[in-house]
Length: 449
Image (cartoon, rainbow, N blue to C red; front, side, top):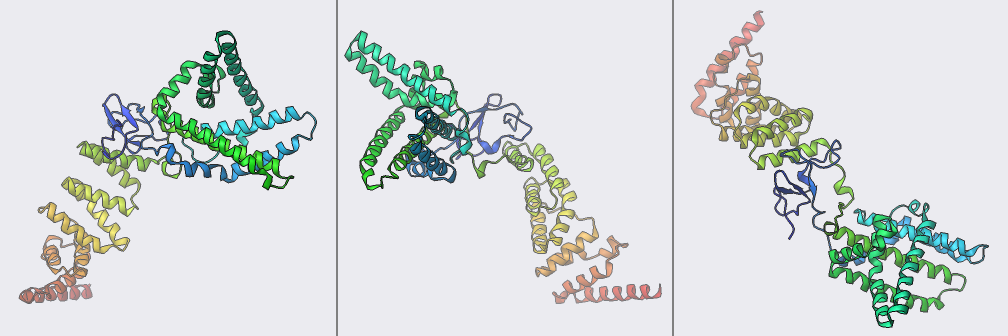
């Protein structure tokens, strides 16, 4: 049974930390470019890969598999190779040319297998077929020769019955031989009975499905060959070669995906490659680590990283909002006293004054005794609150500001705003009149200076 990530219970784990004895998914590991092997967020030790997570079974990907060779690079390769094979018959040294061409085809098919096994669901570049194709073809011929020789020897010296059994076993083993060769690039390891049995046993019943697909595809090719009469004679050989290479690429892609699906059992490790798993930046990794630390209850460690990220990415409003929520949730009054002034100023600069009033209310709800020291911040919050029809907050913040902050340079705008707020309540008319007289005296003093 697959283990799940400790921090994301609905996600299958892809790594295991032997020191912490925890399972985690790709998101919950430190996989920065400085770490050749992903490390644990808790103890910083290297992690053991435990599989690629949830993978769609290969038998459910038949539609995608048959579309696989239709990508531009593989389609060009199929058509080009088919044309060359069609005209090679009329050239000198046709056998050598055929070996080279089919070797390129076999090399490309093996590249499709290993490419898929590594998690790439698109065909490799055509250049994968250029180097080493002739050698690969000779190795394939040699493997066929060795298995045929063994079968013939058993049939001749041990009897036809046992020879038939060996022939059947060789037939059943051939997909495993090709898979082992694509992964190991070693003929002897590919032909090793132990390696063949290990692969078949690790995959289990689905290995039989691959054999069934091979039989079905072989039958399909035979049917296509019977219908070749419909194709003009000048193109019939090109058509037949194209169909053959098309099916071979599909088959090798399916075998590669089977390796990718059962990689844990095969002692293989890969990830589904694509846009979704590009290497994360340091900020993304840091945020993932913060999430893990919070779930572990290590709030001080999480706060240190959070502060660092806010300092490095101060222009990111979403990050600042997230840090504000975190500080409220942990009721960290000391950090809030430092963070709130800059945060509210940033909200104003980005045209989100509506969030200033709302955030201040949330702050007082969590920390009723929280006090503001900076008069400019009081004025900023008061103006935002007044714009949101919250006159009471304005009165609470600015009433008596001339006594608490007599040197405040924006005293007149603050008192003017206070008078407007007091005007919302008839019972405070006397207070409003007193502040008007105060503003009058201040203006008179300023005019005399």
